[in-house]
Image 1 (cartoon, rainbow, N blue to C red):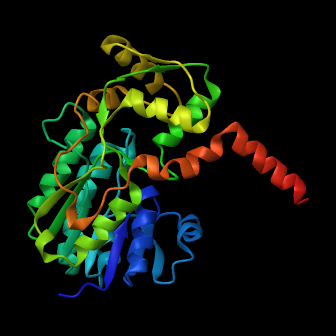
Image 2 (cartoon, rainbow, N blue to C red):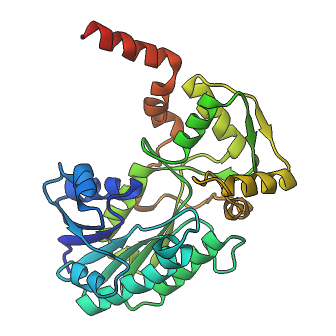
Image 3 (cartoon, helix red, strand yellow):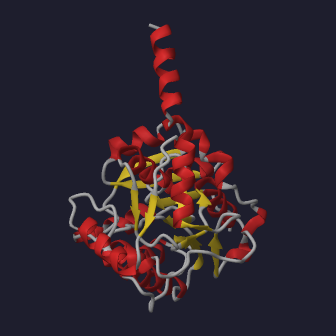
Length: 314
C-alpha cells in the first residue's frame, strides 16, 4: 500500500518539527494533532502540506477520528520527567501507546511508527525506561505494521540537552556534575527525522526496532566540557560520586522547573550507547560538525559582534 498521508502525534515538539519538515520535503501530506493549534501553526505554518488540528490525543474518542483517512501514524509523544495527569510516564508513554494502537485498528491505519528510547526495558532501573519498555511491548504485540525507533539522547539547535548545559555554564562559576561518567552516543535530530521518513516506504522495516546513535561515545563530563569550550564559558567541572549524585538529583527534583530527578539518575546507570550500523544508509552526523553553529552564537565574542552589527544597522 502506498503511503501518502501521515498522522503525527507530538508533531509540534522538538523532534516532531524536524520529522514534519522531512515528511513535507518528501511530498507526504501530514496531519499534526495538538492542543494548542495557534502555537503549533507558528512552528509549522511554512509547510504547505502540513495541516494542524486541535486534538486531545489522550481522548480515546478524539484520537480515532483524527487518525481516520491516514495511511500511517507516527507517535513521537514523550516526557522526560514524571508529572501528573497526561504528563506522567504512564499516561504519555504506556497509555498513549495503547490508545494509538487502538486508534489505528479502529480507523483502519495499517502502519505505526513509534518513538521509544535506547535501553528501554520493562525491567529497567528507572521508571522512564520501564515505561518506554512497556510501550514498546504494546506496539510489538499489535497486529499493525509497526516500526520502533530507540534513539540515544537527541541533540539539535532547539534541544534541551546541550543548550541546558550552555545556559548553566553561562551563569555558574563551576559545574558540580552528577553521574559524570554516564555514557551517551548523541544522535542529531535531523538524522532521527530521516530514519522515520525513510522507514515509511520500506517494507523491510515492518516489525523491526532500530537503535539510533551518533558516531561517537562521550562521557557526560566530556560533553559538558565541550559545550563550555564552544560557548566560551569554560568552567571547572567537579564530578560527583554516586551518593552525591543522588543527593543532587533529589535537590534539583524539588525545584519548580526540574533540571534533573532521581529517576534521571537511575536512567544514567545504563549506558545510552549502541554498536549497530546506522539504518537506511544514513551517515550519522558528528556533534562537532553542527553544534558550533548554534552553541557558538553564545560566546561573548559572538554576542559582541551581534551588538555591533545591530548598532551599525540602526
